[in-house]
Image: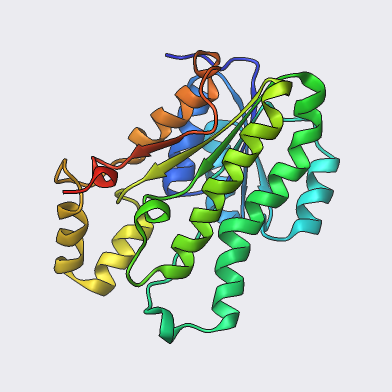
Length: 244
C-alpha cells in the first residue's frame, strides 16, 4: 500500500473501465475520490459501491467544468482519464468527428487542469496525471485524430511540469497499451479475432494489460514517493513502446 489518506482526487471518465479501476485503487489507498463521467447509471452505481461522490459532468464542456469545480473543494490530485476513440482511416473522417475527438481527449484535459491548478498552486502541492496512450508516441493506423489529441496531451503535460514545478506540482502521463476493458472488447467484437491478436502481438509481453496495472501506476505517481518525477511519460504497455 502506498497510502493516499487525506488526498482529494478527481478522476474523469471514472465510471467504467480504466477510470473505474483507478477510482477503486485510490479509494483502497485511502484517498477521497470524486468520479466525473457522462454515464450517470454506471457512475452512480460505482459511487454507491465505493462510498464516493459522483458528478454527471461532460468534461469537454469547459463552462460546465469551471462551474462545477468553482463550487467544489480543491483537489490534491487530478486524473485526466476521460477519452474516446474512433476507428476509421483518416480520409473517411470529417471535421465534425475531429472536433468531438479533440474535445473529449484534449480540451477536457485543458479545462480540468485549468480549473484545479490555482488551488494546487496556493497549497504548494499537487499531482496532475494524464491518461494518454502509446498511440501518442507510436501513431495509430485508423486512429490518427485520437493519436494526435493524445500526442498533444503529452506536450501539454510537459509544459505543465515546467510551469508548476516551483509550486510543488508534478505533471506526468501514463501511456497504456491495449488494456482489457469493455471498450476494447466492443472494438474486438466489431473487428474480429485478428484485431485482438494484432493488439497482443504489438506488445512484448504478448498479452493485454489489466485495469489494475494502470491503476497501480496512477497510485504511485499520485503518491509522495513520486515527488521527484515530473514531465515524464510512463508506458504501461507490455513493452509496446520500445518496438519489436
